[in-house]
Length: 282
Image 1 (cartoon, rainbow, N blue to C red):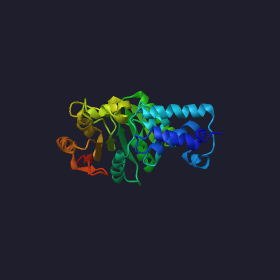
Image 2 (image 1 turned 60 degrees about the vertical axis):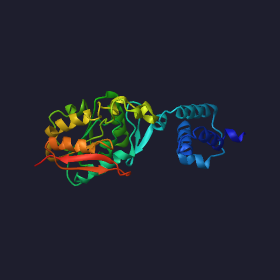
Image 3 (image 1 turned 120 degrees about the vertical axis):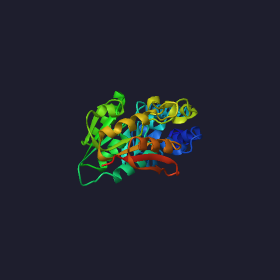
Image 4 (image 1 turned 180 degrees about the vertical axis):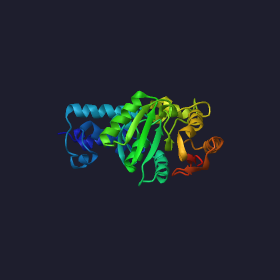
């Protein structure tokens, strides 16, 4: 048996191939685990094992695709978010840790001891909706998306996680909510400016454009949501929006124009403005 053909040997070669990544070894391990259908922990106990020809070929293909820039989450088909492991596909935005700030802020405003109605607009993989549903089992969460393919991913995640307190509706932002009113509406809408050079770099090249960019200043979707959300909020209800690091002032102004109160912006772990929120009076 050649050492180069073992799990350890293949991992070392893959990490060298992915050296441009800051976490090359970790990525190689996650790709190997996916190719073998085993948890990452298995690799440490079986470093001398020799994968079968089909598995080795599958691993090599995954490594090459990652080296060419395809997002790791799409290659392995999953991404961790909050306490959940979510299935992701190229039909949905890859959930990111920054969005967990929005979940934290929402949970602070939802009483765990009482029923509540929550909406997540543009749910994608279901990350926000499912995190809130898992932490607030008495709440009824409505997850919306304009994309039927994205909703299918979110629904599959809800079913696999056993979260029965989530409903799904297809439509553009608040249009999917019908006449419903909610104690809290949350959204991580597209907020990158059209033509922003970041759209042609890294993982963003492979993610759905409609979930990333929104108009000349990146605020088109947020304007639509802020304009129509008050009609779908209960008196005293909250609206929470993720946005770009330099958009806080603009989003706060939109919330104020819409008649919201207790407006504030929370910063992410790198001290960048990330989520703005406001409450409907009453």
